[in-house]
Length: 142
Image 1 (tube, one colour):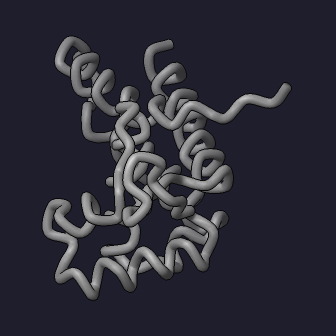
Image 2: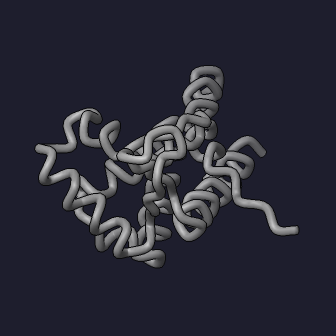
């Protein structure tokens, strides 16, 4: 049985890095830049870099909610932190669905609402980022 990659790892890793870096005397900036470089490379090979910054922010917002075991409806994303006007957010969500990064399903509690969630492709991409960042952190500790 195949399990879904854990999308929480990348976010947890960044929090762990912040705590860890306060107690280590190495150049703290170097590791985060290496992690960012790995993330950008994975974005380029996965197609994430083809999305505009607003769509990427929305995708990240949805991923963070999933990592915290929260379910989001489209209306939650529209009301999200500064993603733009409602028509802009709806347009970005449609782009993300068309590109295969998210899926929308009817909300079982409210048939008028739609839930948004990451697709398997998005989860795998974030898991790959997490795994590569974890390797960098482990190598830096050694």
